[in-house]
Image (cartoon, rainbow, N blue to C red):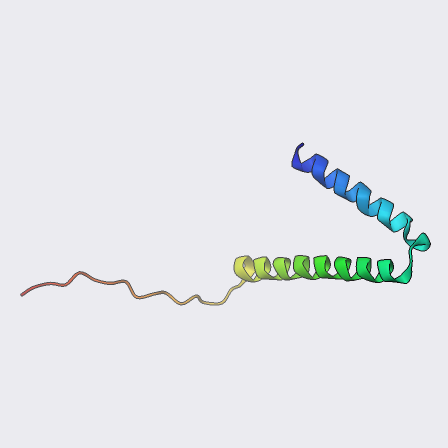
Length: 72
């Protein structure tokens, strides 16, 4: 199974879960919303981290390179 098929299968499962939500009890709805909130938070933090690392114009500290010891 390729990653595309995996994403399609996962998307279909989420869609089926969303379609069955009106028939679910409140505990299942709350658990599903907490899970979706967690996933969304992780994705937003990942995007922010990538944006900060790739698009930041701040000067980065250069580490001091060790120079060889010269004997007189």
